[in-house]
Length: 430
Image 1 (cartoon, rainbow, N blue to C red):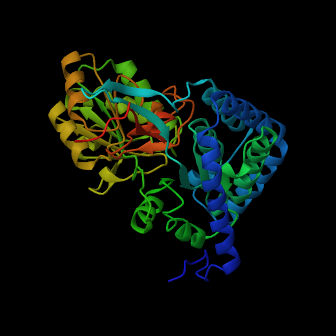
Image 2: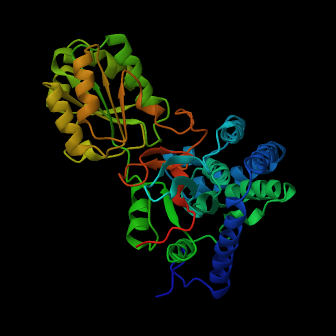
């Protein structure tokens, strides 16, 4: 069956040709990038940063068009927030490119080397993945973040952003492609799918001879669809149901600051806290004040019976709430009897993304770090730090909750694989 478009119509032959041509050009470009020197790649990254700065007015105007369209189609406030660009966010995109340029080049790193008794010299060497496909929603910064990370790690990238950010992504990609052209590298190494609509994604996911890995970035529904339909290996995180557990020995002021930051600093992100777990010994004294402060910032609280007992008037949480990624100013609150109960709750309802404990007890902190099986676990810090830039990776290609190949924020090293380089002096196997 032919892929369907956004409105359910067949993807036209012209559109199919355009998608395949974009991916084929990226494949050819990947061979050029794989042999590019660190100096060439860094020069191109510098040119890309300048191109975004020079194209600021054009990019922001394209983004305004997308935001107005999103309001007209009544997208959720969370999606509109992810979509919106301003001077600050554009500046952060430029800073991310510059940070990636300053990082060590992973390509060619020797991971291990040894000599066999027969004289063979064997090395395990980092090499690019090849062509990376990114399917994403809303956030235009993904276009530049993924392009710069893939370039530095020697990969070509094929970008397919959501229809709601079509104009923003096209403007950003055009600026970056122009920078590559001026630096003598193939602009097709940043392949922006020129066709809006779901049919383009469906076709993209079948091109397993041209694309080496797909990384989806977006909501749970998008990621589930990609996993179900892709013939290409997928690295993903399904959703971010992140927890902060406030232990009985927590510093009250620290715990309050962390809880407010984890929920309110930017609630539409996958690393924002969705459930607050509080030890029963703090329920009567600490929890009511924190709930009041959260509500003052517009947070809707949904609590269990014990939370409602100390904060009358809050909504009661359903079983579904505990496993929901709100991506909004909504928070589930549960009072627990022990660290064991908190860990059990996270194991049952969590998504293996980011979870934190606030405590002064080193033994309980160590248990939490050891027993909570998430991509990022924290002691006395906000979950909002699960981010490639904050981890010192320059930017991130995505966050993985998988266990194979990559986990957590994915930077340059996660965009490489390895090959064995074997040198001999004429050895033959007996």
